[in-house]
Each structure stands twice: as structure tokens, then as C-alpha cells.
Image 1 (cartoon, rainbow, N blue to C red):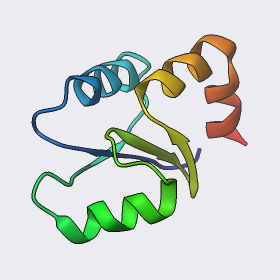
Image 2: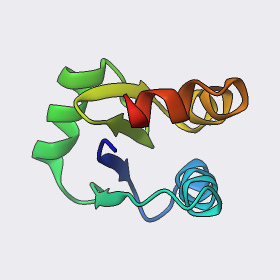
Image 3: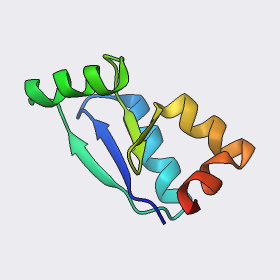
Image 4: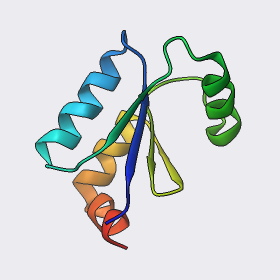
Length: 84
């Protein structure tokens, strides 16, 4: 099973929803709070092209934010990616 990393901030509603979804699926994940980490925010922008959070990685692959996570879960693509 691949590692899941969720980059978030303390004040983000979509981050809360992403964490709830992963928890409900019983998928372990590492949360990385970038609320006051400017360097990590710059790294995220370079790695994903996005300024928003959450940003979710499965292994080394960026899958996007909550909307993409939920869509991948509905289609079955998320479990296939995690177990690949």
C-alpha cells in the first residue's frame, strides 16, 4: 500500500472533508500542516501547480485536492492507485 500525504492548513474546510473521507475509508495518512510554512507552500506550488489546499499525494503522485480525491474514490481509481 502506498503512503498518503495530505498537505493542509488549520482553517481549510476542504482539508477537513478530505481528512474525514480518508478516515472513513480507514486509509492511514500523514497530515502536513503548511499554515505557517512558507517554504513548503512554495514547494507545493512547484510540485502541483496549485496554490490551494488540500493537496494530496499517493506515493509520489499528486492527485489534487478534495474534489479529485472524492471523484477517485467514487470511480474506484483511488483504491487501485493505493494498492498498485
